[in-house]
Image (cartoon, rainbow over all chains, first blue to last red; front, top):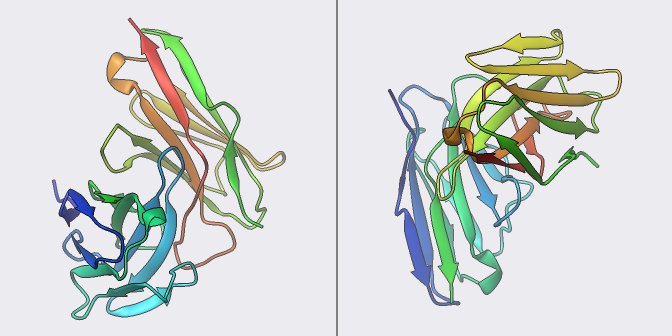
Length: 112
Length: 113
């Protein structure tokens, strides 16, 4: 069964450092989402791509976060500089329509 | 604003019993709803979805009910098993036509042996 891949699974970084997460969606899925999930809460959308174009980045803190999907396949989410409040699970999801989304295992970020 | 909420943060049931997890949504424009199961340290796993032109949909051991009049969604799990223990989230697509999902806070289901 096809799955969304994410790496790393865990990341510990010091505040003010840069950190990057990678996502490989299910093959053929044109839509890719990055969500942030704070412990005990539901995921919140950070950015959505349709192929290589950003569809929605209204909730992305653009002063420190950036995301790209250059060839419309895999994607990278970067934080620079990381802050203590960025500690969370970062989830990637993909979809081949505007409905059912499939999530990856997530990257657990801890900022110290 | 748009929000999706769940009535109970925690639900404890006996193994073999049926479970009902409830969710209230606020956006009348939502036309798609989905339930996810999330185990500790893992990403959300799709369970079942429903579109607004339906009021009931059944899967394997799960049923989703949608009441648009009172903006209420529920997930029923038949013969609950220990492996069903997890956090369950409902989500809606709100007024967006891009596929963006708005998640609720989650209900933790605890299954007692």
